[in-house]
Image (cartoon, rainbow, N blue to C red; front, side, top):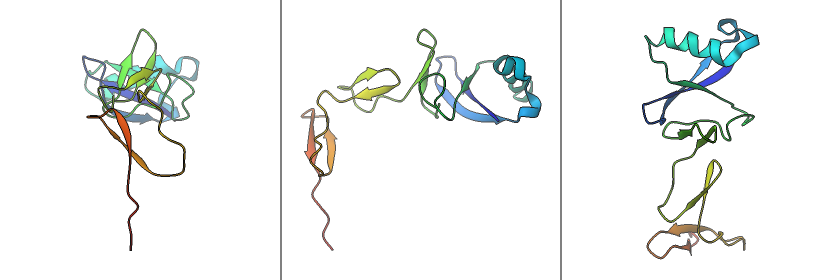
Length: 120
């Protein structure tokens, strides 16, 4: 099975589809998968292969992810404006504390805020 992301005109992932190996020429998996999906979808041609095991293109594509053709990677959606991209993922301006407590990101203060433990 091969997975392909359907992209819009801005290279945003609209959906991810699985193509059965019987529909793909193993000598040219990506091109034959795109040809199959183009016919199957009624003419949509903006498809790109993604890897469930993250073997290619950084990360497995998901709806709302973007594809960067210059880097040939999928990029997760940016969670907050202050975060910067590192490859396919985004990083906070400061690392989350690793003291065993739970935290959430506060964009207003651009810092990690401890989440109070719930009591029974």
